[in-house]
Length: 448
Ligand code: DOR
Ligand code: ZN
Image (cartoon, rainbow, N blue to C red; front, side, top):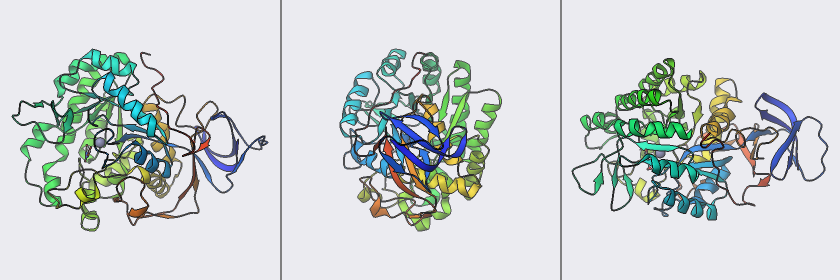
């Protein structure tokens, strides 16, 4: 199979080349290759590595009315994302190898694109739990620093712990310090939801307006959590990954930690780069998420961090709740929104507006693939890599319409937005997406 005549984004930069594929794997990337089988006409198109979204919430198992692996991966495929990495806050939460294996089997039966799974760190987790999850294929481990765990429901709860015997205390910095050496030994990343519970407690209030949401989740919560976790990570020599970075203060704190040698990756999301609190009147509760979409100044700082390469990953925090739930009053609407389908388009637009469209595949594919240990198979158009390819038309346009979302939910914070690109065709391991099942991806260097 040959992708002929396109502009290919390769690890060495963009070039006019043909891409030869055999058995789902890229074998050659050169101009003037002769076809011997099927030819895909890529003239006038960008040939990009499929997106790797390292932050999605499939809701599967747990909340099929919100999403499942089928609807999640259809949305991903429609947006040029060929690997999704699912967060562990499904129900039962992924806190052991057994739960991870059951979730993997479920995902295999439904997924249209490849998928990876994060494991959960609970305050009661042991090093052995993590070792077993790593052996079962976890890409890394996530700690939710401000969220307790319901023992009866086996669920991470998006409310700080109260005095309830059913609620296990959130993982805290002590948990991280205790388990970081084990994570470092496994060679996997330690990811955090960076909100400090004591800061949140000090600012807790009823959420009647968007302003209340911002005040209840100040940037200090992000910065404090990030700085404490960075100290722990540096001491243990573990790779710290900061999910959904949202604030200028968080960015500055992360940069301070990097300057003293902390191994740290920053992920932010399209909604933090393209929207600010000023958009709330137009967008409404679809915009309610945690951490929140903050001020225009925060947004500008994040865009600048991305431009400077300090923030290397853009993933979505695709977190669907039902259209009905999201249409409740602001106080009642749950936090989180779908986003995987508009990830690549958002980033292409942002990169184009910055003056270098080829930054997009780095943020959306190359850097996230490296984070989750897939740097030998995903994230690049080069010999030896899976032929996960998004064909993008730089002369097309896409106006985001909520009813065209393939997620089970039809709302989008990007609704109405126009992008100067259109995704034409998406291939997974050399096959048109949909023609083949997704497989589970595992980090190449476990125990390495
Ligand atoms: O807004 C959010 N929703 N933030 C999170 O961190 C989790 C997510 C969810 O799972 O709904
Ligand atoms: Zn999330």
